[in-house]
Length: 77
Image (cartoon, rainbow, N blue to C red):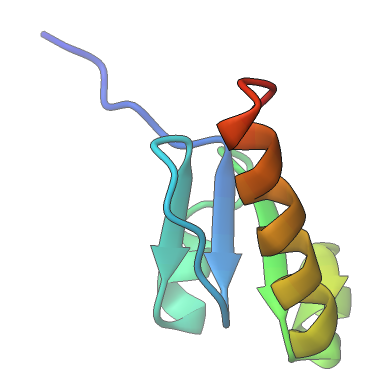
């Protein structure tokens, strides 16, 4: 039996196209990644606190995505 691969980063409230990232659309879907992925919440600070997840404002997330995409182009991510 082949194990199911869990991406190391689960993002709620934002998205990032990368094979190591899963973008979730609901709180319930995010909860299914607890203990399996690093959790990121964009725009909902209360949820991030509740789940002890990383929190980004929408503006911070846009900056992070831009930075990450540049690092991918350079072969660093």
